[in-house]
Amino acid sequence: KIFERRLRHYLSVWDERLSRQRCCFGEEVTIIDFSLYTVVLRCNQLMPQLCEGLPHLDRWQKTIGARPGVIQGINFDAA
Image (cartoon, rainbow, N blue to C red; front, side, top):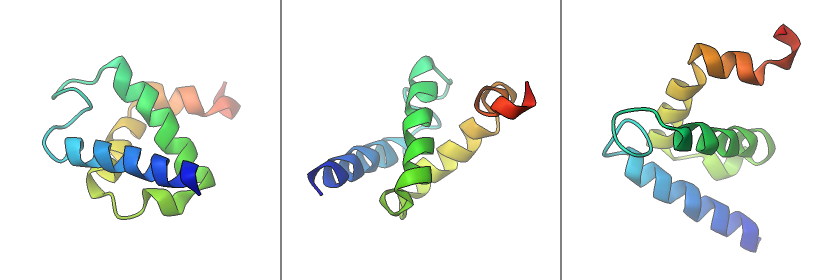
């Protein structure tokens, strides 16, 4: 439970930040976006309830996840 509360808080902080900007550190995608994307992707797979109600994080995840390189990077069967 402690881990889940901390992770939810962490995700909430990012949701609030992403309410003011397109990407993690402004308007341009950086390595931080790709790093956070893996955390959010895995969280959605294993504990989706922790990602609910975070609209800015959801928008950002869809935007990053739609990038061709990200699609190729997470689709191991396509290689």
